Length: 515
Image 1 (cartoon, rainbow, N blue to C red):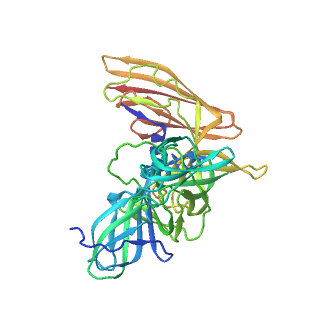
Image 2: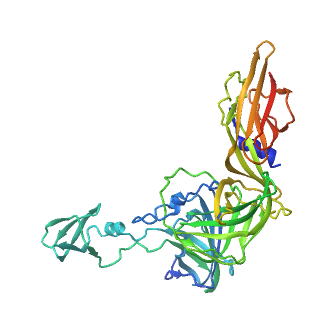
Image 3: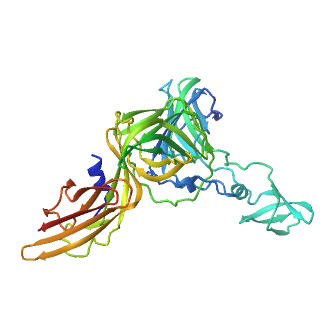
Protein backbone atom coordinates (compact mmCIF):
# COMPACT_ATOMS: atom_id res chain seq x y z
CA UNK A 1 0.00 0.00 0.00
CA UNK A 2 1.15 3.53 -0.65
CA UNK A 3 -0.39 6.89 0.09
CA UNK A 4 -0.93 9.41 -2.67
CA UNK A 5 -0.78 12.96 -1.33
CA UNK A 6 -1.87 16.27 -2.77
CA UNK A 7 1.54 17.86 -2.20
CA UNK A 8 3.44 15.16 -4.13
CA UNK A 9 1.24 15.50 -7.18
CA UNK A 10 1.23 19.30 -7.14
CA UNK A 11 5.00 19.55 -6.88
CA UNK A 12 5.35 17.23 -9.84
CA UNK A 13 3.05 19.38 -11.89
CA UNK A 14 3.72 22.89 -10.68
CA UNK A 15 7.40 22.66 -9.80
CA UNK A 16 8.34 21.76 -12.91
CA UNK A 17 52.77 3.31 25.40
CA UNK A 18 52.01 5.33 28.76
CA UNK A 19 54.27 8.26 29.78
CA UNK A 20 56.97 7.58 32.38
CA UNK A 21 56.83 10.96 34.10
CA UNK A 22 54.08 13.55 33.83
CA UNK A 23 54.57 17.25 34.27
CA UNK A 24 52.09 19.42 36.16
CA UNK A 25 48.87 19.61 34.06
CA UNK A 26 48.57 22.74 31.98
CA UNK A 27 45.21 24.52 31.80
CA UNK A 28 44.05 26.40 28.72
CA UNK A 29 41.68 29.32 28.45
CA UNK A 30 40.34 31.14 25.42
CA UNK A 31 42.12 34.38 24.62
CA UNK A 32 40.74 36.88 22.11
CA UNK A 33 43.40 36.01 19.52
CA UNK A 34 42.73 32.26 19.68
CA UNK A 35 40.61 30.81 16.92
CA UNK A 36 37.40 28.81 17.20
CA UNK A 37 35.54 27.22 14.31
CA UNK A 38 31.95 25.98 14.47
CA UNK A 39 30.15 23.98 11.78
CA UNK A 40 26.51 23.27 12.64
CA UNK A 41 24.38 20.48 11.20
CA UNK A 42 20.63 20.25 11.62
CA UNK A 43 18.53 17.09 11.77
CA UNK A 44 15.28 18.95 12.39
CA UNK A 45 12.35 18.66 10.03
CA UNK A 46 11.49 22.02 8.44
CA UNK A 47 9.47 24.11 10.82
CA UNK A 48 9.45 21.34 13.44
CA UNK A 49 11.14 23.18 16.34
CA UNK A 50 8.42 24.76 18.48
CA UNK A 51 9.16 27.88 20.56
CA UNK A 52 8.39 25.84 23.70
CA UNK A 53 11.64 23.95 23.11
CA UNK A 54 13.80 26.98 23.85
CA UNK A 55 11.54 29.04 26.10
CA UNK A 56 12.60 29.48 29.76
CA UNK A 57 10.89 27.32 32.37
CA UNK A 58 10.40 29.43 35.53
CA UNK A 59 12.29 28.02 38.49
CA UNK A 60 13.65 25.05 36.56
CA UNK A 61 16.32 26.43 34.25
CA UNK A 62 17.90 24.39 31.49
CA UNK A 63 16.30 20.99 31.01
CA UNK A 64 16.35 20.29 27.30
CA UNK A 65 19.78 19.15 26.16
CA UNK A 66 18.60 15.86 24.71
CA UNK A 67 15.78 17.48 22.75
CA UNK A 68 17.82 19.58 20.31
CA UNK A 69 17.74 17.96 16.84
CA UNK A 70 21.22 18.77 15.60
CA UNK A 71 24.95 18.69 16.27
CA UNK A 72 28.14 20.57 15.46
CA UNK A 73 31.81 20.06 14.73
CA UNK A 74 33.88 22.35 16.97
CA UNK A 75 37.50 23.29 16.29
CA UNK A 76 39.68 25.17 18.82
CA UNK A 77 43.11 26.45 17.68
CA UNK A 78 45.23 27.33 20.72
CA UNK A 79 48.83 28.43 21.34
CA UNK A 80 50.24 26.32 24.21
CA UNK A 81 53.61 25.97 25.93
CA UNK A 82 54.27 22.24 25.90
CA UNK A 83 56.88 20.61 28.12
CA UNK A 84 59.33 18.39 26.31
CA UNK A 85 59.03 14.65 26.85
CA UNK A 86 55.86 13.39 28.53
CA UNK A 87 53.36 15.84 29.98
CA UNK A 88 49.68 16.23 30.68
CA UNK A 89 47.49 18.85 29.02
CA UNK A 90 44.16 19.84 30.50
CA UNK A 91 41.64 21.55 28.22
CA UNK A 92 38.47 22.96 29.80
CA UNK A 93 37.01 25.07 26.96
CA UNK A 94 34.72 22.32 25.66
CA UNK A 95 31.02 21.68 25.26
CA UNK A 96 29.27 19.72 27.98
CA UNK A 97 27.62 17.46 25.39
CA UNK A 98 30.69 16.56 23.33
CA UNK A 99 31.09 13.03 22.03
CA UNK A 100 34.42 11.81 23.51
CA UNK A 101 34.86 9.28 20.69
CA UNK A 102 35.15 12.14 18.15
CA UNK A 103 37.88 14.13 19.96
CA UNK A 104 41.11 14.76 18.05
CA UNK A 105 44.29 16.60 19.09
CA UNK A 106 46.76 17.76 16.45
CA UNK A 107 49.83 19.97 16.66
CA UNK A 108 49.75 22.31 13.67
CA UNK A 109 53.36 23.42 14.17
CA UNK A 110 55.07 20.18 15.24
CA UNK A 111 53.61 16.99 13.69
CA UNK A 112 55.96 14.86 15.85
CA UNK A 113 53.96 15.76 18.97
CA UNK A 114 51.77 12.77 19.73
CA UNK A 115 48.95 11.87 22.10
CA UNK A 116 49.60 8.74 24.16
CA UNK A 117 46.22 8.69 25.90
CA UNK A 118 43.20 10.94 26.25
CA UNK A 119 40.20 11.08 28.59
CA UNK A 120 37.10 13.16 29.15
CA UNK A 121 36.26 14.21 32.72
CA UNK A 122 32.67 15.20 33.37
CA UNK A 123 32.11 14.58 37.10
CA UNK A 124 30.94 18.14 37.71
CA UNK A 125 30.32 19.87 41.00
CA UNK A 126 26.68 19.80 42.14
CA UNK A 127 24.94 19.78 45.54
CA UNK A 128 24.09 16.09 45.23
CA UNK A 129 27.61 15.16 44.12
CA UNK A 130 29.15 17.15 46.98
CA UNK A 131 26.96 15.44 49.58
CA UNK A 132 27.68 12.05 48.03
CA UNK A 133 31.42 12.69 48.33
CA UNK A 134 31.01 13.78 51.99
CA UNK A 135 29.41 10.53 53.20
CA UNK A 136 31.37 9.44 56.35
CA UNK A 137 33.07 12.84 56.50
CA UNK A 138 32.54 15.77 58.83
CA UNK A 139 30.65 18.85 57.75
CA UNK A 140 28.66 21.74 59.25
CA UNK A 141 24.91 22.16 58.78
CA UNK A 142 23.08 25.44 59.42
CA UNK A 143 19.47 24.98 60.53
CA UNK A 144 16.76 27.41 61.57
CA UNK A 145 15.55 27.28 65.20
CA UNK A 146 12.72 29.78 65.55
CA UNK A 147 14.13 33.20 64.81
CA UNK A 148 17.75 32.10 65.22
CA UNK A 149 20.13 29.93 63.22
CA UNK A 150 22.08 27.02 64.70
CA UNK A 151 25.19 25.35 63.31
CA UNK A 152 25.42 21.58 63.82
CA UNK A 153 28.69 19.77 63.17
CA UNK A 154 28.80 16.03 62.61
CA UNK A 155 29.57 13.10 60.35
CA UNK A 156 27.28 12.75 57.33
CA UNK A 157 25.77 9.25 57.20
CA UNK A 158 23.20 9.73 54.44
CA UNK A 159 21.83 12.39 52.08
CA UNK A 160 18.71 11.59 50.06
CA UNK A 161 15.84 13.70 48.81
CA UNK A 162 16.93 16.78 50.74
CA UNK A 163 17.14 14.87 54.05
CA UNK A 164 20.41 14.52 55.94
CA UNK A 165 21.32 11.88 58.53
CA UNK A 166 24.06 13.24 60.80
CA UNK A 167 25.97 11.81 63.79
CA UNK A 168 27.09 14.63 66.06
CA UNK A 169 30.08 14.72 68.45
CA UNK A 170 28.04 13.06 71.26
CA UNK A 171 27.19 10.12 69.00
CA UNK A 172 23.54 11.18 68.65
CA UNK A 173 21.97 10.43 65.26
CA UNK A 174 20.09 13.45 63.96
CA UNK A 175 17.64 13.54 61.05
CA UNK A 176 17.51 16.96 59.39
CA UNK A 177 14.58 17.52 57.01
CA UNK A 178 15.62 21.03 56.10
CA UNK A 179 18.64 23.24 56.38
CA UNK A 180 19.73 26.73 55.42
CA UNK A 181 23.27 25.95 54.41
CA UNK A 182 26.22 23.59 54.52
CA UNK A 183 29.83 24.25 55.49
CA UNK A 184 32.26 22.04 53.56
CA UNK A 185 35.91 22.38 54.54
CA UNK A 186 37.29 21.41 51.11
CA UNK A 187 36.21 20.45 47.59
CA UNK A 188 36.26 16.66 47.42
CA UNK A 189 38.75 15.10 45.05
CA UNK A 190 37.55 14.05 41.60
CA UNK A 191 34.99 16.83 41.16
CA UNK A 192 35.57 19.56 38.61
CA UNK A 193 33.72 22.77 37.79
CA UNK A 194 33.73 22.38 33.99
CA UNK A 195 33.86 19.44 31.55
CA UNK A 196 37.53 18.85 30.79
CA UNK A 197 39.58 16.99 28.18
CA UNK A 198 42.86 15.48 29.41
CA UNK A 199 45.73 14.38 27.16
CA UNK A 200 48.97 12.54 27.92
CA UNK A 201 51.23 14.18 25.34
CA UNK A 202 54.72 13.25 24.18
CA UNK A 203 56.78 16.04 22.57
CA UNK A 204 60.31 15.87 21.18
CA UNK A 205 61.26 19.31 22.50
CA UNK A 206 59.74 21.93 24.81
CA UNK A 207 58.30 25.17 23.52
CA UNK A 208 55.15 26.86 22.26
CA UNK A 209 53.01 25.02 19.74
CA UNK A 210 49.75 25.77 17.98
CA UNK A 211 47.38 22.86 18.51
CA UNK A 212 43.94 22.09 17.13
CA UNK A 213 41.33 20.37 19.29
CA UNK A 214 38.27 19.14 17.38
CA UNK A 215 35.16 17.20 18.39
CA UNK A 216 31.47 16.75 17.74
CA UNK A 217 28.87 17.96 20.20
CA UNK A 218 25.14 17.50 20.51
CA UNK A 219 22.74 20.14 21.78
CA UNK A 220 23.07 22.66 18.96
CA UNK A 221 21.11 23.10 15.76
CA UNK A 222 19.98 25.61 13.14
CA UNK A 223 17.07 26.11 10.82
CA UNK A 224 15.95 28.59 8.20
CA UNK A 225 13.05 31.01 8.54
CA UNK A 226 11.63 32.81 5.53
CA UNK A 227 9.47 35.91 5.89
CA UNK A 228 7.49 36.85 2.80
CA UNK A 229 5.43 39.98 2.19
CA UNK A 230 2.78 39.47 -0.48
CA UNK A 231 1.48 42.17 -2.83
CA UNK A 232 -1.39 41.70 -5.26
CA UNK A 233 -0.75 41.87 -8.96
CA UNK A 234 -2.95 42.97 -11.83
CA UNK A 235 -5.32 40.05 -11.25
CA UNK A 236 -6.22 37.53 -8.56
CA UNK A 237 -3.92 34.87 -10.00
CA UNK A 238 -0.60 36.74 -9.74
CA UNK A 239 1.39 39.01 -7.47
CA UNK A 240 4.84 39.62 -6.01
CA UNK A 241 6.56 38.80 -2.72
CA UNK A 242 9.48 40.32 -0.84
CA UNK A 243 11.56 37.44 0.51
CA UNK A 244 13.61 37.76 3.69
CA UNK A 245 15.65 34.77 4.87
CA UNK A 246 17.04 34.24 8.36
CA UNK A 247 19.06 31.57 10.09
CA UNK A 248 18.01 30.68 13.64
CA UNK A 249 20.67 29.01 15.82
CA UNK A 250 19.77 27.23 19.05
CA UNK A 251 22.73 26.49 21.35
CA UNK A 252 22.23 24.30 24.41
CA UNK A 253 25.51 22.39 24.07
CA UNK A 254 26.95 23.62 27.37
CA UNK A 255 29.56 25.95 25.87
CA UNK A 256 29.80 29.48 24.50
CA UNK A 257 31.60 29.91 21.18
CA UNK A 258 33.20 33.36 21.19
CA UNK A 259 34.22 35.02 17.92
CA UNK A 260 33.77 31.75 16.07
CA UNK A 261 34.14 31.18 12.34
CA UNK A 262 30.60 29.99 11.68
CA UNK A 263 29.50 27.52 9.00
CA UNK A 264 26.15 25.88 8.42
CA UNK A 265 25.60 22.70 6.42
CA UNK A 266 22.34 22.28 4.52
CA UNK A 267 21.52 18.78 3.34
CA UNK A 268 20.76 15.33 4.65
CA UNK A 269 24.07 14.11 6.10
CA UNK A 270 23.77 10.48 7.16
CA UNK A 271 24.95 9.40 10.60
CA UNK A 272 25.11 5.96 12.13
CA UNK A 273 21.92 5.15 14.07
CA UNK A 274 21.94 5.79 17.80
CA UNK A 275 19.97 4.07 20.55
CA UNK A 276 16.75 5.78 21.52
CA UNK A 277 17.10 8.25 24.36
CA UNK A 278 14.51 10.15 26.36
CA UNK A 279 13.35 13.45 25.00
CA UNK A 280 13.80 16.06 27.66
CA UNK A 281 11.49 18.98 27.98
CA UNK A 282 12.36 22.62 27.54
CA UNK A 283 15.38 24.83 27.84
CA UNK A 284 16.24 28.30 28.94
CA UNK A 285 17.12 30.82 26.25
CA UNK A 286 17.78 34.44 25.64
CA UNK A 287 17.19 36.10 22.29
CA UNK A 288 20.17 37.64 20.53
CA UNK A 289 19.95 40.57 18.14
CA UNK A 290 21.01 39.98 14.56
CA UNK A 291 23.95 41.80 12.98
CA UNK A 292 23.29 42.47 9.32
CA UNK A 293 26.89 43.00 8.14
CA UNK A 294 29.03 40.50 6.20
CA UNK A 295 26.40 37.85 5.62
CA UNK A 296 26.60 34.23 4.54
CA UNK A 297 28.41 33.02 1.44
CA UNK A 298 27.05 29.82 -0.09
CA UNK A 299 28.88 27.09 -2.03
CA UNK A 300 28.40 23.47 -3.01
CA UNK A 301 30.18 21.05 -0.68
CA UNK A 302 30.17 17.36 -1.63
CA UNK A 303 26.44 16.61 -2.09
CA UNK A 304 25.40 19.36 0.31
CA UNK A 305 25.57 23.15 0.55
CA UNK A 306 27.79 25.09 2.91
CA UNK A 307 26.92 28.55 4.21
CA UNK A 308 29.87 30.48 5.67
CA UNK A 309 29.35 33.66 7.66
CA UNK A 310 31.66 36.45 6.53
CA UNK A 311 32.37 37.69 10.05
CA UNK A 312 33.07 36.14 13.48
CA UNK A 313 30.00 35.29 15.51
CA UNK A 314 29.56 34.72 19.22
CA UNK A 315 27.05 31.97 20.01
CA UNK A 316 26.33 32.04 23.78
CA UNK A 317 25.29 28.93 25.63
CA UNK A 318 21.57 28.63 26.37
CA UNK A 319 20.62 31.06 23.63
CA UNK A 320 18.87 31.49 20.33
CA UNK A 321 20.27 33.85 17.75
CA UNK A 322 19.08 34.99 14.35
CA UNK A 323 21.38 35.94 11.46
CA UNK A 324 20.40 37.10 8.00
CA UNK A 325 20.88 34.33 5.43
CA UNK A 326 20.75 36.61 2.39
CA UNK A 327 19.63 40.21 1.72
CA UNK A 328 15.96 40.95 1.20
CA UNK A 329 14.83 39.96 -2.29
CA UNK A 330 12.18 42.41 -3.48
CA UNK A 331 9.35 42.04 -5.97
CA UNK A 332 9.80 38.34 -6.69
CA UNK A 333 7.00 37.32 -9.09
CA UNK A 334 4.62 34.69 -7.79
CA UNK A 335 1.42 32.98 -8.86
CA UNK A 336 -1.62 32.26 -6.76
CA UNK A 337 -2.72 28.67 -7.41
CA UNK A 338 -6.19 27.47 -6.39
CA UNK A 339 -6.56 23.69 -6.27
CA UNK A 340 -9.67 21.64 -5.67
CA UNK A 341 -8.76 18.12 -4.52
CA UNK A 342 -12.13 16.54 -3.89
CA UNK A 343 -10.72 13.12 -3.01
CA UNK A 344 -8.38 14.03 -0.16
CA UNK A 345 -5.82 11.35 0.62
CA UNK A 346 -6.47 8.07 -1.15
CA UNK A 347 -4.63 4.76 -1.07
CA UNK A 348 -3.64 2.61 -3.99
CA UNK A 349 -3.13 -1.15 -3.69
CA UNK A 350 -0.50 -2.59 -6.06
CA UNK A 351 -1.86 -6.11 -5.52
CA UNK A 352 -5.42 -5.75 -6.80
CA UNK A 353 -7.78 -3.13 -8.23
CA UNK A 354 -9.99 -1.12 -5.89
CA UNK A 355 -13.58 -2.24 -6.53
CA UNK A 356 -15.23 -0.31 -3.67
CA UNK A 357 -17.66 2.15 -5.37
CA UNK A 358 -17.82 4.69 -2.54
CA UNK A 359 -14.11 4.86 -1.84
CA UNK A 360 -12.69 8.38 -2.43
CA UNK A 361 -16.08 10.11 -2.46
CA UNK A 362 -16.06 11.55 1.08
CA UNK A 363 -13.41 14.14 0.32
CA UNK A 364 -13.25 17.81 1.34
CA UNK A 365 -15.10 20.68 -0.37
CA UNK A 366 -12.36 23.21 0.37
CA UNK A 367 -10.38 24.79 -2.43
CA UNK A 368 -6.77 25.04 -1.32
CA UNK A 369 -4.61 28.10 -1.99
CA UNK A 370 -0.91 27.98 -2.88
CA UNK A 371 1.74 30.52 -3.81
CA UNK A 372 4.24 29.42 -6.43
CA UNK A 373 7.51 31.21 -7.12
CA UNK A 374 10.61 30.41 -9.13
CA UNK A 375 13.95 30.23 -7.32
CA UNK A 376 15.86 31.83 -10.20
CA UNK A 377 18.19 34.80 -10.61
CA UNK A 378 15.78 36.30 -13.13
CA UNK A 379 13.08 36.30 -10.45
CA UNK A 380 15.41 37.87 -7.87
CA UNK A 381 16.42 34.71 -5.99
CA UNK A 382 18.58 31.96 -7.53
CA UNK A 383 20.36 30.42 -4.54
CA UNK A 384 19.96 27.06 -2.78
CA UNK A 385 17.28 27.48 -0.14
CA UNK A 386 17.76 25.39 3.03
CA UNK A 387 14.68 23.65 4.35
CA UNK A 388 12.70 25.87 6.67
CA UNK A 389 9.47 27.51 7.63
CA UNK A 390 7.89 30.12 5.38
CA UNK A 391 5.60 32.79 6.85
CA UNK A 392 3.63 35.06 4.55
CA UNK A 393 2.17 38.46 5.44
CA UNK A 394 0.24 41.07 3.54
CA UNK A 395 -0.26 44.76 4.24
CA UNK A 396 -3.77 45.92 5.14
CA UNK A 397 -4.47 48.88 2.88
CA UNK A 398 -6.58 50.54 5.58
CA UNK A 399 -3.72 51.12 8.03
CA UNK A 400 -0.60 49.61 6.48
CA UNK A 401 -0.35 46.95 9.19
CA UNK A 402 1.14 43.61 8.21
CA UNK A 403 -1.31 40.76 8.67
CA UNK A 404 -0.41 37.06 8.69
CA UNK A 405 -2.02 35.15 5.79
CA UNK A 406 -0.33 31.73 5.73
CA UNK A 407 2.56 29.49 6.72
CA UNK A 408 4.18 26.38 5.33
CA UNK A 409 7.44 24.40 5.43
CA UNK A 410 9.62 23.89 2.38
CA UNK A 411 12.25 21.17 1.79
CA UNK A 412 15.82 21.86 0.64
CA UNK A 413 15.25 23.59 -2.69
CA UNK A 414 18.04 23.89 -5.29
CA UNK A 415 18.40 26.98 -7.45
CA UNK A 416 16.27 27.10 -10.60
CA UNK A 417 13.55 24.99 -8.96
CA UNK A 418 10.03 26.07 -8.01
CA UNK A 419 8.79 26.73 -4.50
CA UNK A 420 5.21 25.83 -3.61
CA UNK A 421 3.77 27.34 -0.41
CA UNK A 422 0.44 26.17 0.97
CA UNK A 423 -1.47 29.16 2.30
CA UNK A 424 -4.78 27.71 3.46
CA UNK A 425 -8.31 27.31 2.07
CA UNK A 426 -10.17 29.78 -0.09
CA UNK A 427 -13.22 31.32 1.60
CA UNK A 428 -15.24 32.25 -1.50
CA UNK A 429 -14.42 29.38 -3.83
CA UNK A 430 -15.87 25.94 -3.10
CA UNK A 431 -16.02 22.60 -4.88
CA UNK A 432 -18.10 19.46 -4.91
CA UNK A 433 -17.30 16.03 -6.31
CA UNK A 434 -19.73 13.22 -7.05
CA UNK A 435 -19.76 9.86 -8.77
CA UNK A 436 -22.16 9.64 -11.71
CA UNK A 437 -21.57 6.05 -12.79
CA UNK A 438 -19.60 3.03 -11.56
CA UNK A 439 -19.59 -0.30 -13.40
CA UNK A 440 -17.41 -3.37 -12.87
CA UNK A 441 -17.15 -6.07 -15.57
CA UNK A 442 -15.43 -9.01 -13.93
CA UNK A 443 -15.27 -11.04 -17.14
CA UNK A 444 -13.66 -8.28 -19.16
CA UNK A 445 -11.68 -7.17 -16.11
CA UNK A 446 -12.66 -3.52 -16.43
CA UNK A 447 -13.99 -0.70 -14.27
CA UNK A 448 -15.82 2.22 -15.86
CA UNK A 449 -16.28 5.24 -13.60
CA UNK A 450 -17.74 8.67 -14.38
CA UNK A 451 -16.93 11.58 -12.08
CA UNK A 452 -18.38 15.07 -12.07
CA UNK A 453 -16.69 17.96 -10.26
CA UNK A 454 -18.34 21.34 -9.76
CA UNK A 455 -16.45 24.45 -8.62
CA UNK A 456 -18.29 27.67 -7.68
CA UNK A 457 -16.64 31.10 -7.62
CA UNK A 458 -18.39 33.48 -5.20
CA UNK A 459 -15.70 36.15 -5.49
CA UNK A 460 -16.07 39.48 -7.26
CA UNK A 461 -13.09 38.70 -9.45
CA UNK A 462 -12.18 35.96 -11.89
CA UNK A 463 -10.06 33.05 -10.68
CA UNK A 464 -8.22 30.10 -12.18
CA UNK A 465 -8.70 26.76 -10.44
CA UNK A 466 -6.93 23.43 -10.95
CA UNK A 467 -9.17 20.42 -10.40
CA UNK A 468 -6.92 17.57 -9.31
CA UNK A 469 -8.02 13.96 -9.73
CA UNK A 470 -5.99 10.89 -8.79
CA UNK A 471 -6.87 7.73 -10.68
CA UNK A 472 -6.11 5.29 -7.91
CA UNK A 473 -8.19 2.18 -8.64
CA UNK A 474 -5.58 0.51 -10.85
CA UNK A 475 -2.32 1.39 -12.61
CA UNK A 476 -3.66 0.86 -16.15
CA UNK A 477 -6.34 3.34 -17.16
CA UNK A 478 -7.65 5.41 -20.06
CA UNK A 479 -9.79 8.52 -20.11
CA UNK A 480 -12.60 7.65 -22.51
CA UNK A 481 -14.22 11.09 -22.26
CA UNK A 482 -12.66 14.17 -20.68
CA UNK A 483 -12.15 17.92 -21.23
CA UNK A 484 -8.70 19.48 -21.72
CA UNK A 485 -6.28 18.28 -19.07
CA UNK A 486 -2.66 17.69 -18.07
CA UNK A 487 -1.00 14.58 -16.67
CA UNK A 488 1.74 15.60 -14.19
CA UNK A 489 2.43 11.94 -13.38
CA UNK A 490 1.15 8.45 -14.15
CA UNK A 491 -1.72 8.54 -11.68
CA UNK A 492 -2.76 12.21 -11.60
CA UNK A 493 -4.82 14.41 -13.91
CA UNK A 494 -5.21 18.20 -13.70
CA UNK A 495 -8.23 19.90 -15.25
CA UNK A 496 -7.89 23.71 -15.51
CA UNK A 497 -10.93 25.93 -14.96
CA UNK A 498 -11.29 29.67 -15.51
CA UNK A 499 -14.21 31.07 -13.53
CA UNK A 500 -15.62 34.55 -13.95
CA UNK A 501 -17.06 36.34 -10.89
CA UNK A 502 -20.07 34.40 -9.63
CA UNK A 503 -19.59 31.62 -12.20
CA UNK A 504 -19.77 27.85 -11.78
CA UNK A 505 -17.52 25.45 -13.68
CA UNK A 506 -17.96 21.72 -14.22
CA UNK A 507 -15.50 18.96 -15.05
CA UNK A 508 -16.97 15.63 -16.14
CA UNK A 509 -14.84 12.69 -17.21
CA UNK A 510 -15.05 8.92 -17.62
CA UNK A 511 -12.11 6.63 -16.90
CA UNK A 512 -11.74 2.95 -17.78
CA UNK A 513 -9.43 0.78 -15.65
CA UNK A 514 -8.24 -2.55 -17.07
CA UNK A 515 -6.31 -5.37 -15.38
